[in-house]
Every structure is written in C-alpha cells, then in structure tokens.
Amino acid sequence: MDGKGFGDKNSFYQNLEENSRRLYDLALAKAKEAYAPYSGFQVGAALLCEDGSVYEGVNIENASFGAGICAERTAACCAIARGKRRFTAMAVAALKEGKQASAPPCGICRQFLGEFGQELLVIFGKDREHLQRYPLQELLPRSFQLEEKP
Image (cartoon, rainbow, N blue to C red; front, side, top):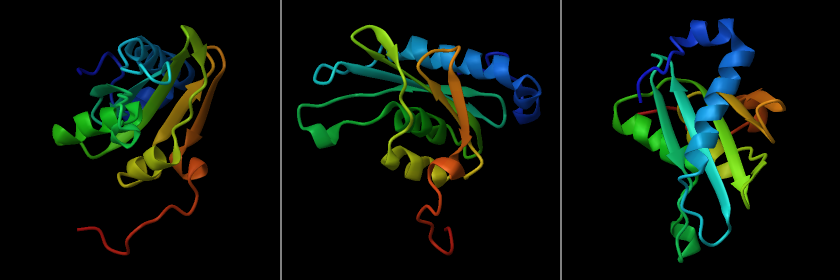
C-alpha cells in the first residue's frame, strides 16, 4: 500500500508506458489471490492515488451471485476506507484458467469509480505488452451524476 515507487500524478505520467506496465504487473500478481470458484475468472486491480499510494483488490465471488464484488471496487473501497478520494490510474488484470485475459471494468465499476472523478486513467489488456489506456470518461460517457455532491 505504499507508493511502490510511482510518486505523484505528474511522476506517473512522465513515464506513462513503463508505469502503466508496472501498475498492471501489480494487478496481475493480485489476480492470483482472487476468490473465483464459480467462474474461474480471477481479476486483480491496482489503484494509484494522487499521493502515490497504491491499493489493490481482487474479485470475490459468492454462491449468492449478487453478493460478489469486483476487483476494481475492492481496491477503491480499500483506498476510500483510508481516506483517499483522488485517484490517478487503475490497472486491471485477469486470469482465466491460468492464462492472461483482458478485463476492462464492468459498468457498475465504471459508475462507482466515476464518483471520484472522470479523469482516472484505466489500464487493461491481454498482457503487459498489449495494454490499452482510457480516461474513465471515455469508458462511461454521460455517467449518472447528481447535480450536487454532499
């Protein structure tokens, strides 16, 4: 959960390609810890906060399917529970039957993350050499927003 050498938001963007790979590697390592006995689709996420701290999460399935949670929201909840509200980038990595797979965030995760800013850079791909990067606002245009936040 420390900065893992990414520095602040500006430092991350100065070496975007390599830092994207490093953040993806953290997500991929975390995917191995996912609890996915029903789908076998293990997902890990690594969320870089603007202060350089990193929070990781995994998908957690449940026999009552609606009770499961995605890796992206797990990572965000860990950060939010520590008082973080400003995020720079999130990498998402997945394993299906032990092989890497591409896993862009689902719609619920996109909406959830959008609560904390549309500028979040979302990184995903089938492996570290084929990463895609999108600002969250491109993945979820015209997301639901209340006129006023509390």
